Every structure is written in C-alpha cells, then in structure tokens.
Image (cartoon, rainbow, N blue to C red; front, side):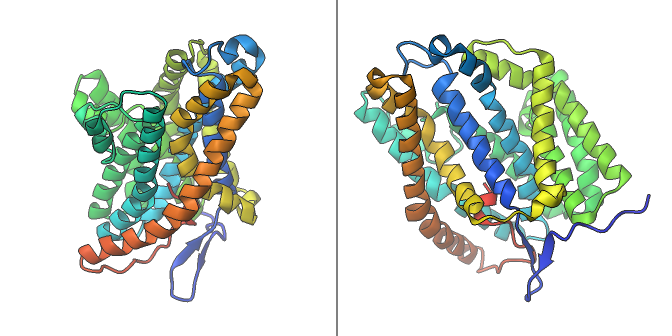
Length: 375
C-alpha cells in the first residue's frame, strides 16, 4: 500500500530541527489530570470524608469513579510524546531531558506533601521521604509519600525501555515490530510466571504505551495499512490486559464494580482522544492557554491527592462541594507556584548540568513538543 505524506505537523526550523506543536494534546493532559483529581476527591475511598461523596451524591460518584481512566490516557500520551522526544536523540540528551523534566518539580512536591502530612498529624518517617526523593521507592518496597507516585515508576520502566531502544537505534520498522511484540512478550512472561520480566516490561500497560508510539509513527511517517494493523493489534491486546487492570483498579479504590464493556470502552476512548488531537485538523489548534494548562499538569498531578485530602478534612463542615472546590483551588495554586518558581528555573539548569556531566553533549536533531506536552 502506498503511504500518504505525513501531516504538516513536523515543521523544520532554520537549524534543521523538527519543531512540534500539539496544543490540544496539552489540553488533553490537563484534562486527564483533572479527572484523576475529581476521582480522588469524590470517588476514591478515603478517610478525608466523614461521609463519602458516594453517599451524598451517588450520581456524581457513578461518573467520577471512571476518573482513573486519566492515568491510562496519560500512558497513551506518554507513548506518543516520549517516542517523539527520543527519536534521533542521543542517550545523554534523552537522559538529560527526562531527568530535568521530571525531578525538580517532583523533589519539591514530595517535600511539600510530606510537610503537609506531618503538620496534619501523620507519623512520616524521614527515611521514607528521603527514599521517595529518588522516584524509585517502589523498587525497594518503600511506601509512597503520595499514592499517585505509582504511575511515575511505571513511566520510569517505560523510559528505561526507550533508552535501550535509543542504543539499538530507532527506526520506523523497529518501532512497528516492538509495538506489537512488547505487549505479547510481556503477557507471555506474566502467564508463564516470569515475574521479573513481566514487571520490567510493564505488561499490563505495555499496549497503552505501544499504541501511543504507533500514533506518533503515523503522524511522522504517514498512514499505512501495516501501521494501522499494528495499532489495532495493540488496542485488542489492551482489551485483554489494560482493561481488566483498569476495572480492578476502580473496584479496589472506589469499591464500585465496573462492567467489562465499560472498561473496554474506556481504554478505546483513551486511544481515540489521542488520535483525534494528533491525526485530524484539530492538531493545528494552538491556543496559548492550552500550553499554560499543559504546563501545570505535572505539578497538579503530583500535589493534589494528599494535600487536597488535608484541605477536605479541615473544611468538610462547609459542605462537600465547598470543601472539594477549596481542595481543587489549593492544588491549582500550588501547581502554579511549582511550575513558575521551580520547573521553569530548575529544569533548564539541571538539563545543562547533566549535559555537561556527559561531556557537554549538544541537543540532537529532534526538538520535543513544548515542555508542557512532555511529562
């Protein structure tokens, strides 16, 4: 089948780099973070409420219990954006980009959350906080300071796979083969009790990342039957792996059961939304406020759970709507502060320091999407 030309999305700048702009992808990321926030404040089982929102507003609960889908949407977006970030980049450059993007905000958010928990009466061991600062606490079975950090460990394992891919060399054909085989090998490792391999391959989420990767290849290289068949295979594999995990996650955290068809529909929606904002004319939308919203996504995601619950505990007497609203506003205010005071200042400085440590390796040929589009 003859491939069509790639959409006019990867524009060349004067220095030859590709410059990518996906405004609605930024908005999609913020929306994903916000529905996760809504889930934690109105559907997740927590001692922050003396009377759960599920009892006060059951209709709302029936909707927001699906807010955990925001995490699965993050994984599809991450597959798209991280491949875009890694393509034609050296390993030192990719490493510097990821570390500088993730850690400055994360360090501050861990310390802020720990401080709020201690002030709110929690018995938080210093060693637990210090290990959490590494972002690899799951590897040492150390509890998270904030529950949302579990997704960062999933992302870190995906980044490790991408780092290996950079060493091998990223090409279109290798991505297609990898995106199809990765979820299959991960599932085989799980069913044959090769637990470490299944864990390293992030088997339950592999098809989400892989599908996002294939969407980027379609954007970059153009449509082809092989690419769409590979993408369809990832969607089907996600129905068998990611959808059951999603249903189990909703049940274990909210106490509500979810039909299999709803879980399948949720996973399909995650793929469809990313495809919609990257493969259709909507990709040209570039409203400035979308970039601003995208920039706030990461700190908002990191800060909202435990700090928001602390706000709710102390304001519930005002009513559940004012308490949840105040928790949201506090989380947004802190996210704005972390982004402008930490990310915008600390990120570039850390990136330069890491590149210098690698021998001052210059950035390579592909420029990633706006910082807000890259977690």
